[in-house]
Length: 426
Image (cartoon, rainbow, N blue to C red; front, side):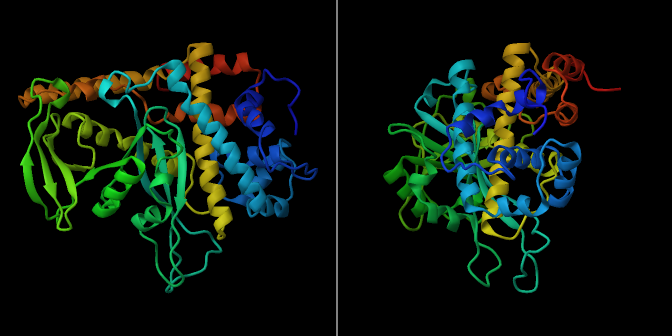
């Protein structure tokens, strides 16, 4: 691999957390033809550079001279269970580094004291197209579906599971895959004593399973109510209408399913749009406005999925084997998590943040406040104060993509980036 001697260049600075994680990884091996370091960088690079195919990516890196690998070895590594195990360990290490960022630099939910002791995740399924060599099921190649979890405190991404249909079936439903993994897996490594909340779309609905997860694993679900739900209302609950965090809440009640499971149902009208929502949860103690807010912030994971699909061109599976599909998902989350670490480094060491995106977000919030007031509705304080930017600008991504190829010195690369983070190109 070239350009490895000067540790102040951008290429090595970006990949340094990967090398540090590899240093302490298990299942690593000395491979002269295609090292584990090259394997990890090639996988992240394939995502980050939005390569259209594996063949195109191998030609790209070989012509650049950054990684020397044959097409055969590249695909053999993607189908290697040993490399998959290595990747899982490295991904875990990088994710834990991202999870430590709120401890050092602040947590956007720290201003909500009721959420102390809770781990918060936005979780959902995400599909992309079948690989070119995928086998047909009932006359058609079926999409590949993964379930991912986004830590709402740190913005660390996790791959939860690949859904796998039984032989001859079109697909496996997400709830079936989640149930198979079980409540302990849904804790995602949260320590004992920490309650875990997953905000999920209505595909998660299985009330009996919710009860098991809550009682057995300390896992709580927040989702939207389906239009065909049939509950028996047991009790209307009071909430603090003077708390600005509850702005938009219209009801808070306990309901019961036909099988006797107790669920909390919260009615909410968005102060800006006037859209009415009905949220279901097994969490019984938090103020209702906080429940609604957590579900609203669930949209963060959809922004990440949009980035996977449209920014990084992860439109289809890299291969047909389970090993390759899982490696692809892990490289996607690894790329996201490396970017989070990289952005924090730019902010802390260089004072660089995406000012243009923050200004755009501030204008959006201001417009929402004005709209709510025009409709004689009170803006929700939690939404107004939440300022995390969840999608990176194309100007930043294009800068990084090119800089990783040209590999300027760190100081030069930073100077090139500054104007792109201050305003949009005109």
